Length: 388
Ligand code: PLP
Image 1 (cartoon, rainbow, N blue to C red):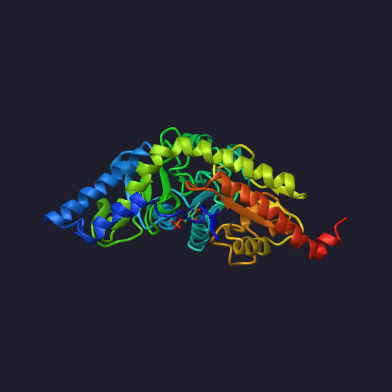
Image 2: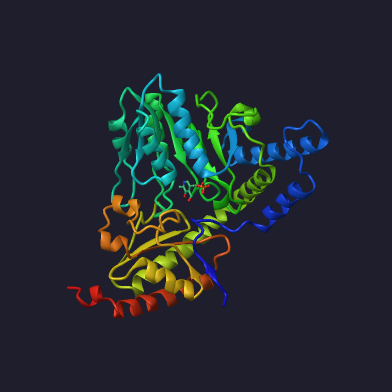
């Protein structure tokens, strides 16, 4: 059975070109990038080449990029690093209720350390209102952090407008761009962003590597102390193969981003239309237009998301019920709760995220298979029988 992978927001396959580029830095050019001999210098050169690519795709300077172990570390670095470095100025942070757990759990931790956090609500589409950000600012605010695009419902936030609010008040602005790097254009100057998190495995690179963009002059304490790697901003032996893979992945993404966004948006819209027209009592979550080119998130009444996911999996179709991090818990997604989705509908939600290798044929197959699964599940659903 040919399997269909529609969970690219959870992770993407490593591109063959990326794997190939990495291999040489594990088996041949395996030097420590801090070593002064030729092995080390070859490794260092490759890391700096990746740094150039990483900077170039967001309009930054190479020295403003710090390589990390992924999106989670980058987010932790921002919140804890700014909190520590700016605690003389204030203890207030503004973020949104729909951030990834890497942000929300870090905020919760900081709340135990004397910091206060405002979690802004969102509208029915998942949009943060820049006016709400403005209203939440106090003279103690040291950081504003709003994600570029939401990983569950795909809504793209008005980052440039929020960034302008932050800039006008002289407050650092961070965006978690884990779901957008390599998928949507990013220019840190146009967006007024001071700090930006990204991750390799969402962009056909390896897992366990990511980056943090730190605008020149931004005061931030390191998360890891030790050696003087990454200009003393992140200690630890540099993950050369991972960073080489990240750089190659970003380079590939840059070349194909425009075309892929158009191609995937068309497939996404066909999937939305095909499912919506053949499944009654279904709705699209997230913004109809301001959404990631690859994201479809639908709620289907009277059926459980898990039942649909498992039945789809038996047909060789891999999707998610929410974000990968929450899919093992029975709690309804905090994102779907924040957009005001009733709990019963939240439990009947599926996220289907397309990728570089997704074909028209695969989308048509899902449009054929999923409505049939819903019909079968509804036939045995007491909720469906009892509906008004
Ligand atoms: N932020 C967002 C928006 C994400 O979607 C993810 C991963 O799903 C992360 C952060 C965490 O990234 P990583 O898996 O690289 O730690």
